[in-house]
Structure formats: C-alpha cells, structure tokens
Amino acid sequence: MKVGVLSLQGDYPEQAAAIRALAGVGGVRMVRNRADLEQVDALLMPGGESTTVGDLLDRTDLREPLAERIRDGLPVLATCAGLILLARTVEPSSFGADPASIGAIDVSIRRNDYGRQAESFEAPVQVEGLRAPFPGVFIRAPRITGVGAGVEVFARQGAERVGVRSGSIWGLTFHPELSPDRRVHELWLAAAGRSAQPANQKIKKSPSTKTKPTRRNHG
Ligand code: GLN
Image 1 (tube, helix red, strand yellow):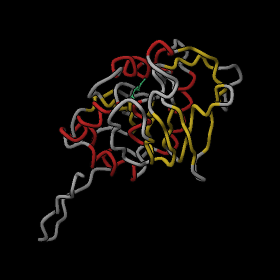
Image 2 (spheres, rainbow, N blue to C red):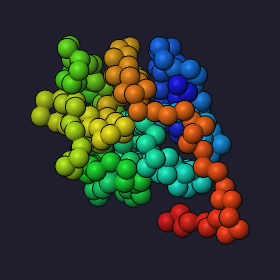
Image 3 (cartoon, protein in one colour):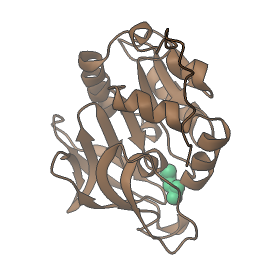
C-alpha cells in the first residue's frame, strides 16, 4: 500500500518517518498536488497550523480533490490540525480566524482548547484494541466537543474524547508520530489495508462525452 503524507505545512517529516518503516507500507509519497494525491492508497494528514494548511489546500487546488477522494473512501489518519480540517464543525475559538473545514467526519472541534503552547502535555491514552495505554503527546491540541451518531470514539484521555473514527477516516487530537510507540499507526494501517483499493482504480478518467468538465466552486 502506498501511503501519502499531506506535506504542505506542519510535522509531515515526522509522520513520513513514523509510517515508512511499518510492515505493509509499499512506499511513502509526500502529497503536495493533485497528481501526488492520485497515486496514494491511504493518507496521513499531519498536525501543524490548521489555518495555514487550510489556506495552502486552496492555493494548491487540493481541497476539492481531497474532499472527493475521501468521499470515495480514501483511508485517512488525521492528527490535530489534520482533524480540524476534516471536522464537520469548527467551533469559534478565541485564537482568531478558524479554518474552513472539509466536513468529512461528523465531529465538532475547538482549536487550542487546552490553552497555549505552555499547556501542551503528555498523558496516557486508552485506545480501543491496545492493551497498555498509549503515550499521548498533546500540542496546542484541539478538543472534540461533539460527536455525531455515526462516529465511534476509540481513544480517550481521562474523560476526553481524543480519537474518533468513521468508516475509514480516523482522527486524533494527539500526535502518535512524536512517540516512539507505533501501535496506533499499525492499527490504522491494518484498518486502511482492509478498506483500501489500489490507487489506479480510484483515478477519475475524464468524461468521454462531449460535455466539458465543469469546474466547481472552491468556496
Ligand atoms: N493549534 C493548531 C491549530 O489550531 C493545531 C496544533 C497541532 O496540530 N498540534 O491548527
């Protein structure tokens, strides 16, 4: 399986390093444009600054193709800023403009809701499917404030919901790539492998009819 890492801003090098060595990964591709996106069977959306990544999704014309591939079932592991960008609702934060999100997973989220950088912390996370707790690294983390009916909470830190999944979309508010522990990546990879189809079956061919493809509004 070829795994893409959205590489516009944030800790994508760490995500690429974390996934590269795992069994079942047949290559890692840094995703910066549509052609990259079309070549991957699964995608990591790393942490970073969600407003910046959101802006870059628009500037690189990736927002719509990304939304479309996710709708078509592309397995995604989104962490922190990545999850903010996938959420259905980004609740207003006190940190200025919040990004427009893709709305691929039915959760509400609020940015930086544990406080500023100084309030970043590490804490054990209970992850479904893992016997021992996972060492969670939370960096200016968002808080999941609401979860839709079709969304399963599979990771908790105390009473907080810190891991959610819906079909092949997984979202975390912590950073598994910053721990040496690879169990969360392995769980996701196994689930992705079960649901992924080869990338070449996903590429949309241009319509063969004479009608021109319409260019949709990027919002
Ligand atoms: N605070 C960042 C944001 O709002 C997210 C932090 C992170 O990805 N660790 O986008």
